[in-house]
Length: 230
Ligand code: 2DT
Image 1 (cartoon, rainbow, N blue to C red):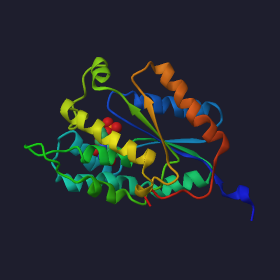
Image 2 (cartoon, rainbow, N blue to C red):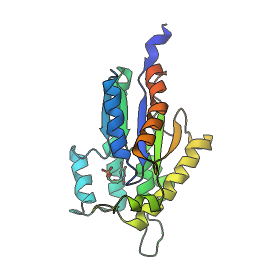
Image 3 (cartoon, helix red, strand yellow):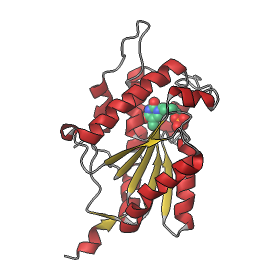
């Protein structure tokens, strides 16, 4: 068999905290790739345009209420509904750049607490519905201190955009970062996790992102798309 026939495009996820500049950098990256002639598809989760995404959107804007378990599963289902498309794109040679993924799914849901401050959803329960999703080849985690985030102006109006919640989310992301960096048992598999200091200037961050992404895109990836946490 021809070894080059199994080469495919990389799946790159950008994760991070609110006010980290994640969305700006994600679209800059996609534009820069396209500008250099790389076939690129930018995706974002939650994808609020699908029927499931519309339920999520309504929940996030507090226009509706949903059980915490139910909305967690909707976020996951919103990824699963796009999973075959992502896999098809990668195999066809299109680089997929993704703004948020399953790591946000865990970090936010596992950070929800009751009136006494006790977690509402166990960490491992939060992970399970996303096990087996297409695994990213690279995750760039945009980390920013609460102080720096504050300097950039207040959070928005949506349900999770509260300081206490954001602090817990950051801790949850750090737990995930540790696992993805070191723990073979959770099956980080082929995914490379890199923490990016997003508290720096926009140009500096952009330079770092490009240095990490460019070689991966140029070289492509060998073998099929891996399954997350398996
Ligand atoms: P945006 O501000 O990026 O649109 O995100 N979230 C996101 C979850 O709680 N679970 C998930 O699986 C995902 C992808 C993060 C809207 C909010 O939704 C949160 C912020």
